[in-house]
Image 1 (cartoon, rainbow, N blue to C red):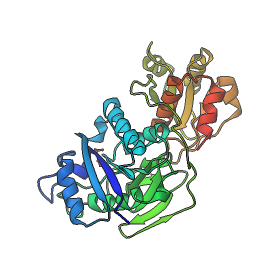
Image 2: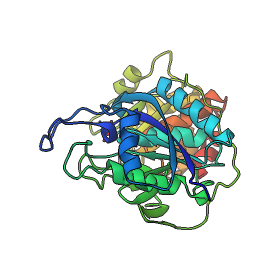
Image 3: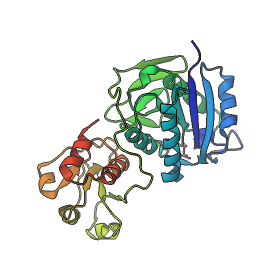
Image 4: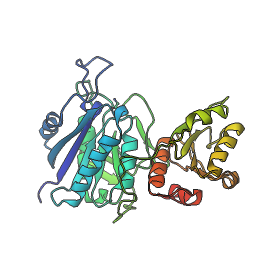
Length: 326
Ligand code: DAS
């Protein structure tokens, strides 16, 4: 059997970063081009053929609509073409979860699409980029990776886009999943799935839009007043995500201000500022016309709400159904 053909879309991040010295703590992301990266990867003699495309070379704190549009376009073409068996996206770790989730919602699930990054730059002692990449190749080459949506491979774990989050600023064990810790374990020599694919044969759930509606996130803190809501919401705002305290809680004055917006038809989603922030519906959500964000982080709740509003869904009951899904 011939080696799987993998399209590698490079966007930068620490996986392509350089410090200029093996012992420096600071470094610049997005320094190595895709061809240089792939020549190191080819030296590992992985059982796959690579085609590289440099989409961007940025730190993922600068990730946004233009790069997302290019990634979506290239992924979609590869998923439709016979020429490729899977796609790997090299990405900074800071916002990998947002790119993964946006693509997860806007691509069909017929072939593997895998995001991968690194926590240490390419010239650091113990660079994790090539191991993570070798793992990503194993996942992207595996037909059973299809039907699981977009996946994120870091530190020998395979995470589903909906669950994954960066939960540490340092160290190679920086990613975790919630509520599912991971959906598989991977090393350069082995891949073990936990259970069967759950999204086999799914079309894209939403049409990709580069120009998504304005949905700010309100991070709740002690001592917050209703003025914060007034300052956040402008004429352009189409919805609000609350990164609430505990299980999506907020001060009473803030609740009243947001319930007023919701009564006027502005979707309001209650998520949690906690890392393991499961937010279930409460009876008051009916009277406030709020949506419970369930296990989605505020930043992913924002993307889902943007996609829903862009596709014309704005009533709380229909929005809730999408947040309840998997
Ligand atoms: N520089 C950050 C980024 O590009 C960190 C990283 O990649 O790990 O997201």
